[in-house]
Length: 420
Image 1 (tube, rainbow, N blue to C red):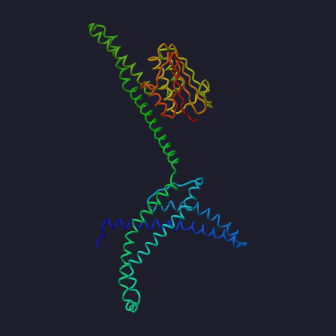
Image 2: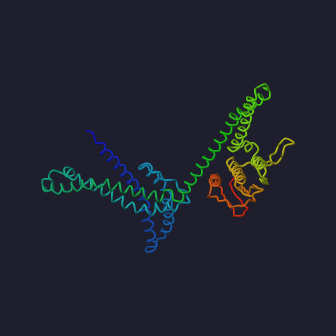
Image 3: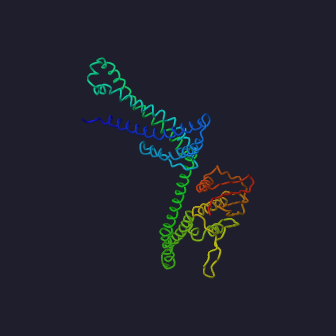
């Protein structure tokens, strides 16, 4: 005989629920018995003093403490093995939640569990009452011939009760899972903290991946397209110098192509520096910012104050104090903030005659301040450039501030975390 799949699944679910409830009854009944024992001992010390009662009470109270804390792991096993619900491993400092579940909520749940199991046993006994009757001696059945009608009623009542057990057991299991997750699960604050930590890690990974991709593109352009353009410019220059007997029209074409090649090399150099300057990796933030200040279209006063390492065993003649290097992502953000700020000053700062860049490291904070003497009036919410700077700073958990009153001066302040 083949059992229908739906009936088989219902039977498996009911067996799981009953096993979960029976295991919970065992774990919840122990604290209830300990509670009753402690209460009886306390009442005995009041109404019937016994010299041995304080000794037994001193033994029972630590036992109650151990039960409130030690039953958490069996409860976690019950939820995981029987219902597939994973509860976190609570630390000792969260013992209040463990005591609340094992010593307060558990004794309340055991009442419902006992009632459900008692209903199940009573339903099975009532449904099989006619079978029990056939186990008694035949003489009793002959003497009590009217047992069939009440036995039939009991059988029907038992079958109805059996039909009610699965939904009641499922409801009780759902209730216990809900309570278990609320009390023994991850608290809302811990869940938010874990979520923030996960998002921080994923964002840091995305920033590192984007920085690595920019480095790869910079290398590919530098080693590929840029070298080809340099070779083309050299060949055109060589042709211009050697092929002097060409018609004037051909000479003009070679001259124009040579100029275009040199302009393309210059634009590609600017593009490569905009993606990720090689000097930033090789010599550090100070040298990279010095290059920016030198290429700026207006005078820039640069001051970089970074702590120095004092490496030992260096060959003679080399500097003995080198600036400490920070995380590549932090250095890249600081560089691009200064680069974009100087570009904005040159393009949009009216009447600006000079700029000042100050980079200092204070403990675990890298502070970058860019100021100019222009007419001010810059609005961070009005354009995409300043918004992009703020987003780039926030990508490494930094802070972005800008002050630009009408009439000037304009000052941009960026603080980037850089743990030691």
